[in-house]
Image (cartoon, rainbow, N blue to C red; front, side):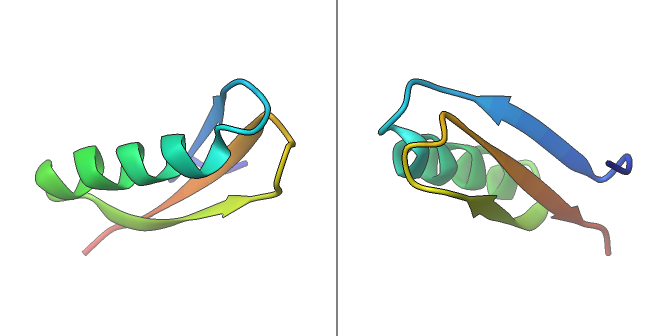
Length: 51
């Protein structure tokens, strides 16, 4: 994993909620990217895109 990724964990079944929250917080800080997740995996990766 490179330096432009965040690896985050949550309770299984809450992946989409956490993904939406991190995207909102990142965007408000001027950081844009996308989420890669699998349903009920209890974790996902956020790929940050730098200008």
